[in-house]
Amino acid sequence: MYPRIIIKENQILENSRHMVKHCQENGITYVMGIVKVFAGQMDIIEDLAQTGWSHIGDSRIENLKKMKDIPLPKVLVRLPMISEVDDVIAYTDVSLNSEIKTIRHLNLKAKSKQKKHQIILMFDLGDLREGLFYKDDYNQTIKEILEMKHIELIGIGTNLTCYGGLVPSPEILGRLVHIKNQIESAFQIQLKIISGGNSSTVTLFDQNKIPKDINSLRLGESIIFGKETSYSTDIKGYYHDNFLFQAEIIECQMKPSFPDGPTTINSFGEKVNIEDKGMMKRAILAVGKQDVLFENLNPVDEQVHIIGGSSDHLILDVTGQDYQVGDIVSFHINYPGLLHLMNSSYIKKVIQKK
Ligand SMILES: *Cc1c(COP(=O)(O)O)cnc(C)c1O
Image 1 (cartoon, rainbow, N blue to C red):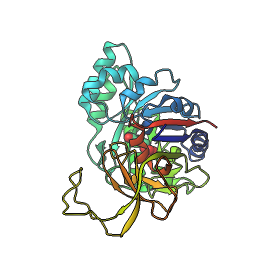
Image 2 (image 1 turned 45 degrees about the vertical axis):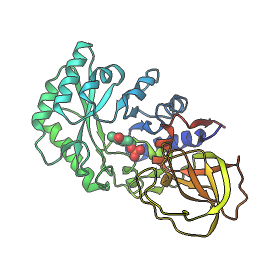
Image 3 (image 1 turned 180 degrees about the vertical axis):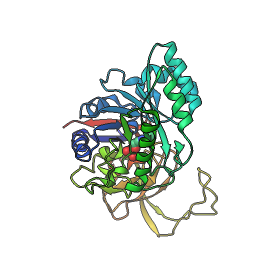
């Protein structure tokens, strides 16, 4: 059945176990495994949850709902919507937060359910996505949170290299450590978790550059692709080739490479630049932009080139190659490609446990 994505589960599980050890060597005792890219595919998520993580996290409450039997604390890593606090209290143990108004709602809802909800307060160290800006005065917010009976402030965290591309460094993470020290001495409390970011912080491993107070990371891509995300390089000693995407050829014919007649925009409203390469052997695959963006695919056969397509079709230049209708073409994919494909109900997911 095609199109399909083959997931090499054993390699990902091994990456995860390796990463947990690697984290411990770098003072990271709380490894939060972030599984949002699997879009709630429980078959693999259940196995990943047994590789030594302290917490499991996702950005969508719908996915966390499916994980209620997983014996790990569940973390909502996107800031909660006020309209979803019911579900946040019911299906998660921890949420990342930056808005006192939302935290008040969480407190009230937790009270009505006689629960205690844990939060990690997010600080923006300059990347400019979520979090209280690190230079602003946050003491009033902390004071109010500490007075809430149904909220437990278990720690603080930050997110780097997501919007602004801010690269983790001892100096940048030092800003978070400074905030920790300031809060702990002003309020005479101990913060359990200091969450120093995502897979981009892994860049600082093995160089002794992670400040010792940072004791937690939230990791997805570095486990699933064996990649750090500051410079997008493969981390040595990990598996990188953990997925294969395959689609079937539904037409394969010799045609001109240049449109025959006057041209306008394509089906996506774009003006495309088409180069005239003379006659070309063209293969059409039964997969389209509604399943994956083509720039996130990389043909395994280096003689094959993606030239474009539309919602339901991907066109390849297979000139000089031995392809015919009914053949299967394979691709490597990157993180955005995986995210998109996992979310398409038209793509079959094949989990190879070996
Ligand atoms: C997705 C996400 C992560 C994990 O990011 P990776 O780069 O995949 O490690 C961590 N924290 C937050 C808030 C996220 O949204």
